[in-house]
Length: 351
Ligand code: PHE
Image (cartoon, rainbow, N blue to C red):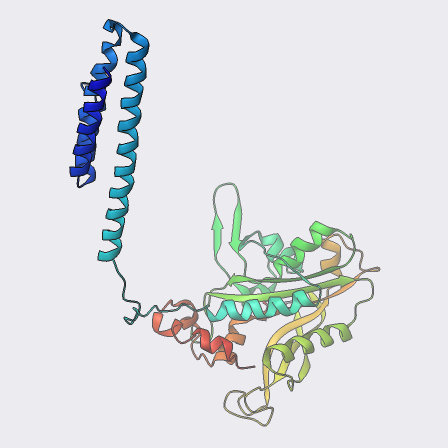
């Protein structure tokens, strides 16, 4: 047996030397250790051996020899193949690369993020209300009962099935109702609610879908002066430090008193130009002190609490800021429009 094993070992050695690829190596493995392999057969011969112990020892020597030579050949071949592969896949790093088009944020996202940053830094929470609303939240609890003429200006889209009636919110003021009802006199409220709203409109300056941002502050000692200071701060941040704010009396059913807010035209600085129609002022939002009825409907005692609210069209800000002339392009998804808002532009923000 010893002699046999020695012969086999030298045979294996010789064959291993001639193996030149992994396939041949695999065949060799089959030849020796496969089902009908030489070593496998020797293994089953142990039962007929006269000196089983010696037979076993020799068999082990043979197996170890085969396995070791198999492994070292395997490693050798593997390395060889890897090197070959590396050689053939060499990359020329000096070749010019394919140009990747960078994406950019949508102008509305930019405006929204800028405003959120500002208000969050002032301690406000960002509230995200649903776009599908009830008539109560969109109108009735905001002091616009069924049949109120001021509803005309906010006609919207209605959804109904046999059980329920819903509508697409026409203003983010719905967030006032939702937040007040969720808090019910549990301390002060300070929120903004940016989001989509819908109306039955469609022309160059009105879209059936646009974006608003609501602001609501409720506390025990809130006055018009707080409202003015807040709006001044935010206009300066968005349109430049020199911006001034002017209040004009107005009407909203859910605020009393109500104001229309203008800012000095950021293009001409208030001297008068085509953008501000020679007036020096641009109207940017509606605001006012929360109407006692609204406080009452939403679970707040108007004797104890006051608040201010404002609502602004974010699209208008985007139009001013980026010089967009047709609001419908904002929602048209035309790549030629969107490509104009590259990252570079964002870095050099017109402030
Ligand atoms: N919701 C009003 C609108 O869409 C704007 C507004 C909000 C006015 C809050 C006053 C207070 O026109």
